[in-house]
Image 1 (cartoon, chains in turn blue, cyan):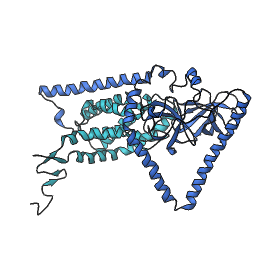
Image 2 (cartoon, helix red, strand yellow):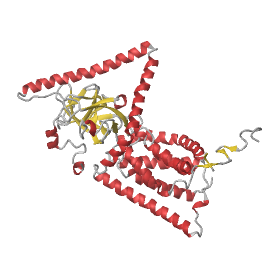
Image 3 (tube, helix red, strand yellow):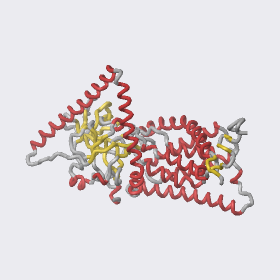
Length: 300
Length: 184
């Protein structure tokens, strides 16, 4: 197929001008795109409002889709119920996995208790969840790992709040709209969470690798004490995440830490809990409260 | 005539008598489908890694290759901006990449005026490779070897999926040219 001749303007002055204007506008588009990109790379918080308004506009549709996802899974479950043995096995395995996480968390809590009892006078109240919401979708074609949540400022959600599911930590709030918000998932390469081993005080940082796994980097270098299957929970340093939320299980040992598998796979999560920032004052002092610390300080 | 053959006065685009194309449908459909493609992050799929092909961009390529001149050259600006609002990329990356790719297709078309399926697929594959690589570069994420091993499956999926998208766009093109408006 040949390209159409209608762009050959000939000697028609008006047509020539039209073609010329098209090129000028397109060139302006390229320049504007480059400028916007430079601004948003240097000052990541600049266009937050634009994105959150856009997110609010589409979130009802997304929510309906998320409900359909839950519904259709129930249909599959109903079909699978005919294969009794298989489904029961799967359910038991699921229960087992939850129990293992629970056990690790309980162990972490016990450790926490021992440590807190040692530090007399420090009291800790239970964190009441801010909101219970649905993970609607995620940026499934971009290299960034950002999820969309069906709760926003109207539900009391604020920037920096941790998001977790019954299986463990999912991420933290990045941008808040009126009824929807964006979540920086743990696997995003910008995400970093202070963690410790559930059984003792081996502390590390969990960085996202954007391929669905996390990289654990030990804070104290030396002999690597991590073994495969070790469960890591949040350590509470930085003041953002309360200590003892399950994060990941180590699957592969590296020289300075480990590669870990996420315990709460966001793909298998639909209802999540938004929790308040654990120690807002400490987080503000340490500068961990804004998700992209330092860079976004000029934003809202 | 109708008693002999009820479809005698019709063609694939509908009745030829007293009907004409709707300009809203004819000019609006490409824009609407590309924007719907940009909304894929709101699908209830929560991917642990970049997995889905960039549907908005692929629909733009397919429309542009199928119907040169239907989308104006500056269409990359509004469509890229809309894509940026939802894709998770920093704002501006879509505007820049969409605009540049429309320019690139213009140049390719001037160089190869006669095109066929294979040349279109090759063009789209080259554009998708550059687009996905540059989008990963612009995403603001730290570039490591892992990043590149992660985007390769996405790239292959996009290239394999392109002919299907192009075929879907060709079907939408028939819908676009349906004679739906009554002439009074």
